[in-house]
Structure formats: structure tokens, C-alpha cells
Length: 143
Image 1 (cartoon, one colour):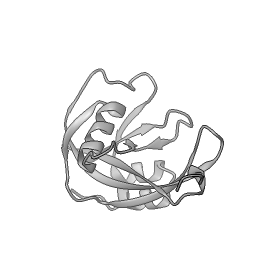
Image 2 (cartoon, rainbow, N blue to C red):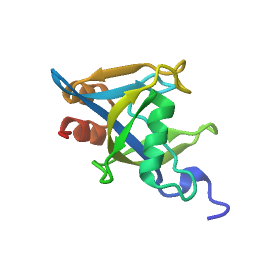
Image 3 (spheres, rainbow, N blue to C red):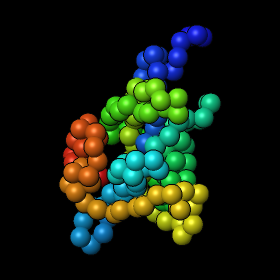
């Protein structure tokens, strides 16, 4: 598709983690703030060439939240959003979401200084994120 701007192509694909843990109070999921808009989101990113989706999900979770663990091989589902590119154009993005059971959290991680983290119930997390399809995935999440 040489000559076609990124914004005019079909949706690009990202891979996301829905980090979760069990506590005495029940299941909690982990949200983070986006770097630019400070909205509540889940860790996600682009897959490197020939990288399995589950490795992308684990890498993005570690980079963005410091949370590592076991990634489920089966995605929960997907959602779509519009990403604002540095050029000012909008890119359609399709995001595959995988559950990641958190087994450890690092005290230091690459994006620690540019993001906030929030452990909360799936119901509250669903209210905090903007994308309707992501809201539905999180609200229905039951490991």
C-alpha cells in the first residue's frame, strides 16, 4: 500500500493486556493513564515483527505498569478506537485484549514517571474507560 497514508489504510492492530488479580475483596483489574490525554486505559501497543501476541501483551504490561504474570492464550475480545498520530491525522486501531493474571509488580519500570496506576473492580474500571466496547469487555470479565 505504498503511497497510501497510514490514516487512510484499514484499522491497524494493537494488542492489550487486561491485568488482573484476586484479593480478599474479589477480582481487581489494573488501569493506567495514557501519556498524552491522561485518560484511563489498559496497557497496549504494537506487535514487533514475528512476535507472538502474548509476548507483546506481556511486554506492554511490564513497560507501562510494571506488572508481570501469566497471559491467557485466548483473547477476551477486541475494541476499536481512533489514535491521534503525530501528524495530526487520525488512525483507526483495532485492539485485541488478553487477560494477564498479575503475579508480580516491579517497584520500578520504564513508564513509571509518565503514568498513574489504579487497581479497582471491573465494574468501576468499566465506568472509567471511554471506549464502549472496552467498557463491555471489562464489565463482563470473570476469570
